[in-house]
Length: 95
Image (cartoon, rainbow, N blue to C red):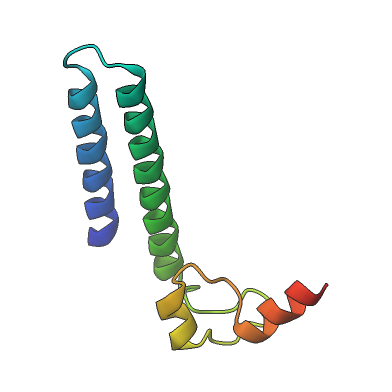
C-alpha cells in the first residue's frame, strides 16, 4: 500500500509543478506545445506505473492472461507491462 501512496504523491507533485510552470508569463505556441507534450508523457508514465502497481497488488503481475503460465523474467525485464507470455503473443500475432 505504501507504493500506491507514493505514486499518488508523485502524481500530485508533477501536476502541481506543471500548474506552477503555466502560471508564470504568457507562453507562446511552442511553450504550450512543449508543456502539453510533457504533461501527456507524464500522465502516460504515471498511468503505466499505476497499472503495474495494481497488477502487483492483485497478484496478476507476471502471469499470462491467456494461459495463466508465468511470463518469462527476460520478457518482463524487457517489457514490464507484458500481459502475454511469448508463446501466446506469437499465437495472437499469427491470427
